Image (cartoon, rainbow, N blue to C red; front, side):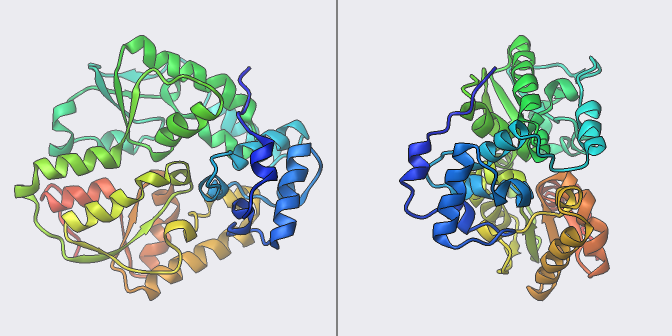
Length: 341
């Protein structure tokens, strides 16, 4: 079994305790935050084990790369603290079980990974993905198991992730374009944190989008719209990619409007907190988030994660915003998708 690479001395000497002080959903004084982490390290019962809603934020806030969120998940599982009712936890484990029903295209050295999200194969088409053709994988056998961190089931992650990596290795691929943000975070954050060797080069789909738009620049028609970006919890595992959103927006004529809940201060879509913290907490997160979008004067709400889009689309429409995935937005700029009036 793989063990988490966590150095307690790094936390013991931390001058900021930002991992908990910056949390959007728990409040601590600095001394309290530091002591809370030390209790966590010692395996003692503490507030964070009962109040963390698994937003991944502390992974980004920790500037020392010591993986506080993974430690929280490990301790919860060790102490038998469930984050959601057992039937929900088991449902997620069962419905993401590998069953040999994966779909594999004409795989080349570079392949698109659609994870286990049915929306992604539809997006991975058109001029942007022309050069990839039918080089893709889809199914539980290639699914990043990061979702199980939300349910404090790191044992499932440690069991399944090596098999996913082996499945890719058997295909002989050299580069994997991660069409799901969480996949990229899994291969560049979770895997190294547990000492797992990734046998390919992970490429974030936003890097691929940016490069393709550069190649297709003469075909871009500026959209001239105002938009907000709904940052998913999974992007906390790869904050170094956040700059791509602004760069892509500028390339296709989209103004990223300033608002309170963006960047490090972003709020999640609220779907996972609904199972973990309850309906009232989730509804409050969504209400504040969407009202902030409206107050900023945005026309479009741009999504990174298809799951976030499914969760919030109907809600943002009620407030007069148009929901669209980042890939769809780029296709609009290339004239492959019509803009809404």
